[in-house]
Image 1: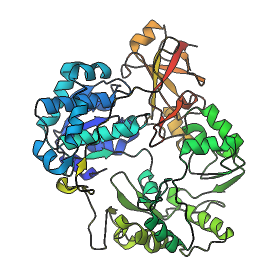
Image 2: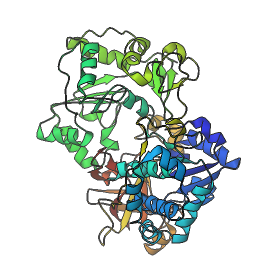
Image 3: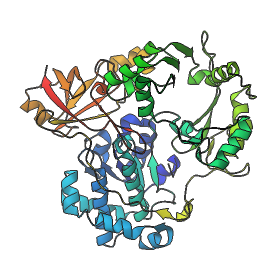
Image 4: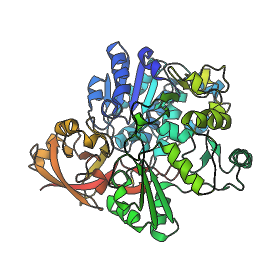
Length: 528
């Protein structure tokens, strides 16, 4: 997030796109709902009429995968009606003429047709965005989990810069991260192209710095493999050892049949987790890890805030803190790492090696934590990035992007769009929530959410068993007939093993981020 959760209470306007906050991020959604009740204006752009959409001043039911065309259409209106922040754009941004040329290809008539909405609604949204400033743009996986996910994100940045909303309190581009500590994992270098603090692997100076710090020679000078290449590498033998740390790939990755084939093909598979999962079934070795409440350390949340985590209870049996497992494994590989606690790892290593975290020390995050960048120990942390339009790279860069449809669209054989997401009752693949009887009583199985018109046409009643089939597999689940879902869509989650949406989802990926297109594939629906 460029901004902070504290901004929510003061915000005048929220533009939420591709985010079902009330179920996927209920705490953050509470901040937003409180603000709306206190008078903030809310625009929700989502194919479904979610609980958040019920609260919205404007709900825009755009088609799945039409986000870029929709936002280009909004920017077309802002530019042609001279509603954009001209002085901000001229002084703080570059590439405006290129952006203008691209969005001129998306007049309201074309953009609205692709998005499946009226021209009048598109124009109304654009004019409302220009009328209230600043506005907070919020997105989640509904933007990123597409084959055009990176371009979707660039579109959100283009829109907010065009409105002059980046660099100010209660504005900005604010992605809510999909899992706990995803932000922290990325900050620590759990990506194939960067060291801790987003220092590039291909940069010679960065490599030299980490070689000296870690006492090693010749760190790799090329980016590592992304998830799809790693999985395919298990099959063709290019990847010999696969180490899965705190992830249940056999339920969370698209096309489970293919995933299981990859895991079965692994020459040697190590899992490190707190419970047995669908993925640990394939493991040669399982390291039992301590859970978050049995650990001492830090998490970094969506707003870049580094928070302390303290041990509430001792880990059971042979379970150990994750850092301890890694250190002991390294020792057996001939490396003697000096730090002997989470605090020593942070204070003696991380804060010395990552420029944005130099000023973050355990002694400074005993209370409410700190938001990076914190360049020195006197710095209070950064609530708002690119303050007053002064971008880290100098000027904000507009990046024109074209709309592309999902990789798989409905046809005669598979006439429905399947879109997937999360439900409030359970979390991810139920590794933890599936062991809570109370939550299973609230929701004990997956459903296929369909619209009343589709249910009537197919003679399906609420609670009937239905079969949902894609080119990759099929599942049998109960139908949930709900006005939340538009005609032509089936909506499912991936929490339950037997009814998991990922038996059906399409293993195609954004070419840059390699994020899978969980949000769109073609399916057939019938009464079982």
